[in-house]
Image 1 (cartoon, rainbow, N blue to C red):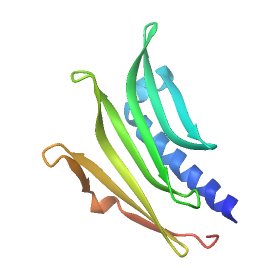
Image 2: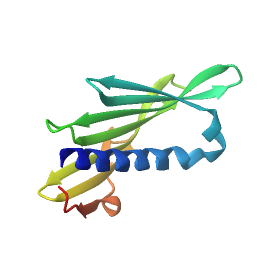
Image 3: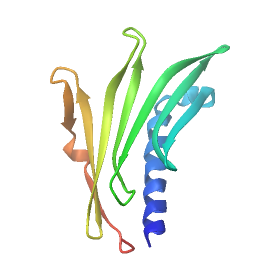
Length: 130
């Protein structure tokens, strides 16, 4: 049963990740992915964009999990070439309660220097297999 939940969560995560990458469809074929795993679990992924014969930073994703290896947070950072650093962009938090999964979206607010809730994007799904 844990395998089914993990597979569904990974599918949901992959779908959200793919949606995020489709923002710039013209660069889709020029992207290179480098995943970071700890004990067989993906904890991060850096996406590079090819520019001629070189690679340039593009996006970075960080993932957090609970003690049951369920994803609890997915954070997306964009590369800021002017400042030569990663900039916070989006954070998705996953909360599990019984057979329900609530996905809460937060967008980075530069003025407040924190993630701000985007309530219209919060979704709760019931999963009878959980």
